[in-house]
Length: 468
Image 1: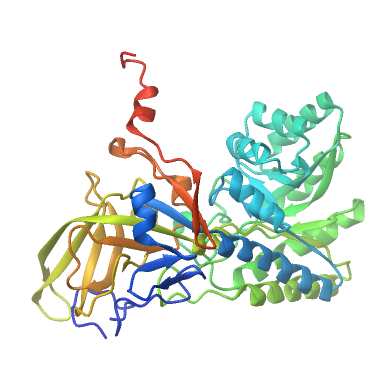
Image 2: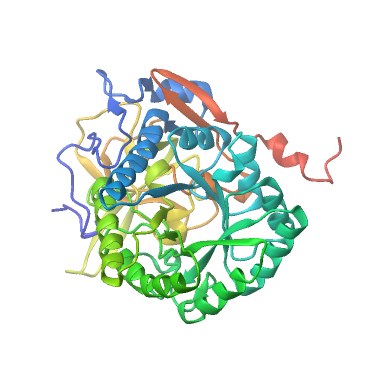
């Protein structure tokens, strides 16, 4: 129960505003003996002294462990039902050469959604055969580069792409494996903008048109049809949507088997993670078990072999592993009028930090909720409801809509926001000409830079009006 009417109904006032809920923080985040946040044995103050703020801090062992754990869970569960699984890391969540190496060393493939992401994966030395290329509007250049490099799978997103990919494959003298993305019409339980399988949207081919599209693919001698692809959304906490999508695809899958092999079924990704202590996503072992049961039961009902299943987690691998550190600048207590449940006033404490929507756009874009904690110390002060704001010239520049911090939070404190690994750096911008922060990996008490932070000189270097 909250002591202020400004707190959202879901937010519970903590007994200890210094606590780090295990479900939200990376596996190697903890308080030191003096109360400071440590990640993989490296203190927040040491990280800030070396790299400044804002800074993304990736718990390397956690990220590697989550990647390995997802692969092992799906390997085990699909072996149980007489099949196998392919796990692709969704590079759009966060990709750099180091992370590309981590996930492939853990046995994952990588899903890329642009020529740029493909270039990063190839620069990391990833075998092109382990890449899958997505995109609703792949350029001719991107298609040609992917085919020429030997990318393992291209996801056909529209009928016009069939000829484009086939032509590129013929030109390079190879047979290009492809999947066909299907818009199943399943509505995932997620934010409107995160749901990507509804009827009226840009991705995929309607289910009713899919058989004709597959016939066109099979008519091209330079293409090899791998199977159907579905992605119903992101940040999903239950399996019902996946089950319904699989059910709708299975009838088509079985029909397509009459005219040729359909070795795979790709059910996409979108597995949710905990951003706050009240979030309760499914455990990855449970997700794998449910997926295997869904697919094996669907195959049994239709009397067909259990296909190889491909999945594409991104957020579930990198999201929980990363914490962003900021420095507190200004603090304002703002008196707010409240109408419900009774007319009154209440105070909201605005804590402003030296980053904002340029390093994490999700709260502004999706109204996403995050958590916050003091990183440089603990405090015995009573919890105070805060709103963590950025420094941008936008009223919507909010990083944490509502959480509790010790009431004595002050300028100069370090603030940590956990679970920022997915779509933080990947969607970062230079709005207001802020520079994008560095990314640092921490492992066994040591920190190393894996993505250099930008400087103002970097920004000016692209402005052709600047005098050398």
